[in-house]
Image (cartoon, rainbow, N blue to C red; front, side, top):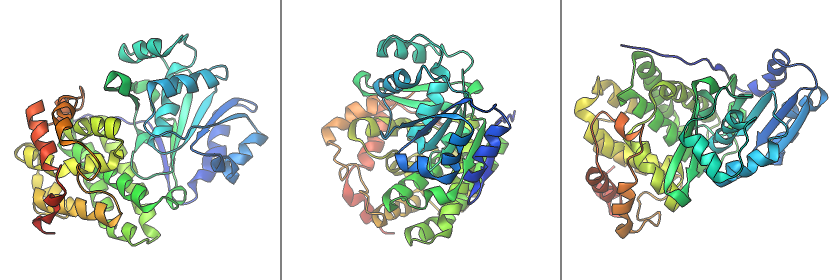
Length: 381
């Protein structure tokens, strides 16, 4: 049975961030409280956001941490809980949007400390969100503006947590490629590969559907078709990546991701490997594992512009290398003796069990060993 649902109003295109004022005026009265959450203060100076001060009571907060932790989320909650805004506007990458959408689920609750916050997240005691949010990505990769979950890291407890509520989709998403144009090439490529992983995993997920598969294939075609332009510094690549990331987000908003993401989480949590780089290294090995269970594998390979998992591995490592990023776990500083423990942490509920082929720690350790040595790239491009 095919079912698909996504209520996010998506506006995509150069300059579309200018629509933020009109969108808010259609929903909230003047002098309403607005929380503007951004990576750095330069966002507040952009005309579209500076103009909000003329109409609303805007509380501006910078959050410049990647992979937000439970402790960081609690601190930000304490800073802003007296505001309880009508809208949270989250401007940034996936980390900014994760904390923005998480706050919407937490406002109005008594949360004494981080342990209380953990209990709320673990027991899904959110209720109806107290605020709505608008997502405005400044990276083209996470698709977080179109999903209803937020990733919160908890390294002290050796786990990744997810705040998830179908009542907490963004009210709107403004996907403006002009906001991504200044990304360093390493971040741009890592983000693009993250988006591609979202699409590929959505395509083969156990929870896949015909709508998500169609969106996923178009996302993969768009991203792969523009990777060389992105690496060559061509401006048109940013619009392609913004579109591809949005399409991938719409695809996996209904299917979630699978083993690649599940296995990647401890690599990011313990070794700080950028999420997109970590998950991209796992795509080819998981393609080989999943191949027999993938509906219309030839359509996926065609979208990826490859004929095999080995060719995809060389293509991805080539992109990473051209962007100046390490192409193996060894090069990222992962210790061989840690692979066994990392494999044990790689079975994330809701992701590992969404993979079309059952996986276990032994399989994960074998996959990690495959992407560990730098010399693996020598198989020929």
